[in-house]
Length: 231
Image (cartoon, rainbow, N blue to C red; front, side, top):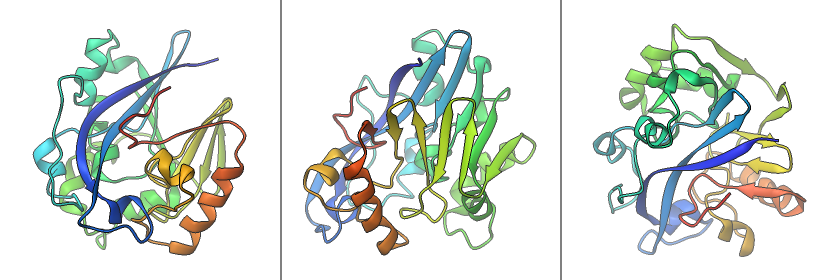
């Protein structure tokens, strides 16, 4: 069994048009931005790396308000330092999708193998990626690192990675026991509670179907952005 720790990296008053299908841009909901540390014995893994530079993140946002940090929100290295985990101990990093707020702390994990879907990896390095200028540092770091890609599903020991699509075409979930980390394929638990799919998506049909699938999931669903997310 893994010990799982939520690592808060930032928050924003996010436009509801991002969070909910048919949500209004003028209405907002406070969301966070989280990474997750998995630990079992001497093994330490991460799900995503959160926001590294707030100023850069604010150039990629889809809301009027800015990303900011409360006293308990930190960039990934500081988060790990505060709980006594050296970045060199991290041996696996699972990237749910390659947006700045999920991948920008990658540079600290020189001993890690990174995992993402092949679709996401290809878009990450594509010249057609409209966020490419903000991802340059992470792209440079990862080009010389071991990155394992897959098409549909991959078992990494007892952890299941599954391509989901929706928010980005290569978005993936990470299933650890009966806990499913869904990245940004839904943003907050009210997507489930209100039965409203995610707003920001590159494939509306897929996002709508994912909500139905998650509503049937028997375990615990963990989001990357619910401000009140708990483990």
